[in-house]
Length: 317
Image (cartoon, rainbow, N blue to C red; front, side):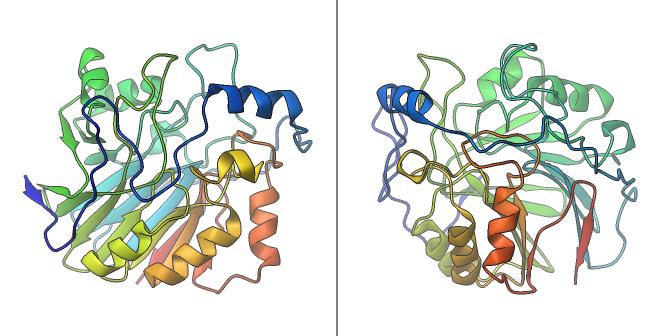
């Protein structure tokens, strides 16, 4: 394991809990109660039946990167030599309880049974819409992927007999097969219960190979870490940038970008192509299920910023 040299990572652990350096911290419980008591969520359909499921290829032979949006922050990344899956979720709810919590509004764009063999699974943090244990158990049982997680998250996966697991801190790298995975900063927080807030880390990932880099931002607010990533790794060939769960801004801005901020991040990174993630499947905040997509389109995004539908793929040369 190596440090991602050439870039200074500010202190982000106080000995007990992780925190966002140079950025705002997530709002606390009282603010969350205020949000829920005063919010007026934008109405959305209970379910949208517009997904055309696709079957990805088993592997990619040329130097192209093939990115398939499954749903939410789940993207299948394929390049010659490896298949990588980000924050996979196929469950009906993003919740510790199967009968309550945010419910799926759209089907996954790929049936999990139609996935090719997965070499690496990247987990950005431990929230239920990003670390979905039923899906991870299924993936571990159907093959032998390697799971890469931020600091502190490995314990949960190992307790569920999900592995092998590699934990990374910001600035650390791990080479797995033909892919070098670097853990990079994000502005967010972690928790799966009442008492474990910020006990584990959150992150994004840079995947480096002979044909350039891919950046998966995970879940993040807007911040100077995009400039850090550009400085250290260069302009990404492909970036996966979150655009949803951003309203109300007084509550969400420290931890979730809005659509216009995602466009700014795309520009700062100098990404050849960006794909919007974290939208269109679960309504986790006050904006409607398709409002992030509409807001992006109103902003006249460049042709290099793509809004894919669940199941749609994009080839990045």
